[in-house]
Every structure is written in structure tokens, then in C-alpha cells.
Image 1 (cartoon, rainbow, N blue to C red):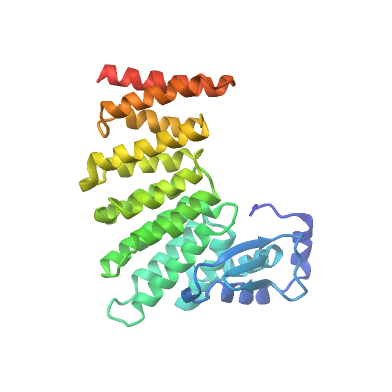
Image 2 (spheres, rainbow, N blue to C red):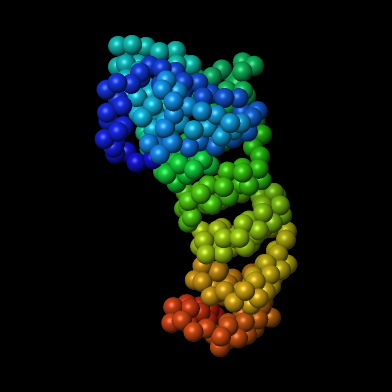
Length: 330
């Protein structure tokens, strides 16, 4: 969502009901995690809501009025400021509600994110509500990261907050579902925002939390994602990373993956740069043998004979030359 206010939103602020908007939207953001991740969407003037209604819900799908969110944000920001300068202290529940609204409006609001960190750190580990509170926080953050929102899926503040949260999970002895997080959060965010650097960096962090999982199951779901998004260099880069740290699977996994990708580019006549950068890097590495390098050169030469556009010819020719240069320099 753009930070700029159009004339209609600005006009609605003068005749709106900020407190009602805040109450409606803040309550919507506190839905139970049992219902699954929220699919949040900001509704502009093309999807007006009836008067007095600021959010609509259909299962996990939630639509929030843009003008209502702006009104709620102003209320939430005032509450947070009053708490921080001690002029109007708020309870923990009120702060969680206010900062949730702020992060929906502005995912880079560091003060809101840090306030939530302080609240979570202050939770007594011995209390029965520790896990539910941390689970609810993860539910909100994951909902923001995977929804069809303009800036949230690639927000460094939100991704860093998620990393910090998982570290807190570990320190409290709570389990982290590495495969589930990569499948349901990282891969979804990567699809919502192509070449999502922050999401794929988080995937590396997750894989490092549980190396034994990354050696097998994660490799499978990431390969499937790359097949469906073969022009996304970030996905292919993470796939190469997995192969380089896949432990006991070793060379077998790399050679198998290499053969599958070669078959993919040969059958579909793919010449995009992302997939060939992956292939050239893998072919030039120690993860595969000479047999795979011969296949790489053969597939590349065969495809060169069928290409007609100068861009495809340049990409493929560059990949073949790069691989040979790197092997010679080694």
C-alpha cells in the first residue's frame, strides 16, 4: 500500500470515526491462529465498504478499508507515543493491538517492531500463556509476510523480526517447523514478490536451524518451486545453497538435480538467464563430475542451434564460456 493519501482518503479522514476504525481493525488482526494465516488485503476506493464498516472477513481472507486503516493508524500511533513518553501508559494487550495496526500500515516502523520485542521478552517463561503468545505473534508476522500487500512481503524489518522471534522460540524450548516455515511462508512470499532477497535469506537461516531436514524434504519442495518459477534467480540461488550443504546426500543429490534441470531446459527450450546461471555454477563446481559437465556443454550447444533472439544467444553463450573459464582457472 502506498504511503501517499489520495484525495478521497484525505477527505474521509475529516468525516470518519477513527476510534471505531481502530477497534474494528485491531480486533481483526488478533484472530486465532487456529484459522490459518490471514490473507490481508487493503481495499481502495474501487472496493468501498458500507458506512461504518472498516474490515470484512471471509474465512482467512480479510479486507481492510484503506481510509479506515489510515484512521486506525493515527489512533495507534498516538497510543504508542503516549506510552513511550509515559504521558498515557498502556497495558501489554493494548500495545500489541496498537503496534499490529501500525505494522499493517507501515511494515518498516522499527519502533512498533521493537516494542513488540520488548513485550515478548518480558513474558515470564514459567507462565502457561508463553507458547500461545509467541504462537500468536508468529501468526501475525507470517500473515503480514505472505499476504498480497505491496511492501510487507519484502520488508527487512518484518523478516528480521521473524528471525528474532524464532531465536526466542529456541531459547524457550519451543519447536520450530523448518519445513513448514519454508513451504508456507518463504515460498509464498517469494511468489508474492519475485526475487525476494529477504525471504530467501530467511530460508538460509531456517535451513541452518535444522540441517538434517534441509538435506531431504526441503530440497524437494524448493526444486518444485524453482520448476514453477524458473525465471526467479533467488530461488535457484537457494537451491544451489541447499545442494552445497546437503550433507549425507552429497554428490548424488547434486547430480540428480543437475540431470533434472538439464532435462527441463532441453524439453522446454529454456534460455533465461536465471536457470542457466544456476546450471553453469553447478557444472563448474565440485558438486558434480565430468559426466555432468559434458551434458551441460552438449545441452547448451544443442539449444544454441535453435535460438534466434540475440538476448537468448548472449545468455547461453555467456553461460557456456563462463563454465569453461572457471574450470580452466581451477
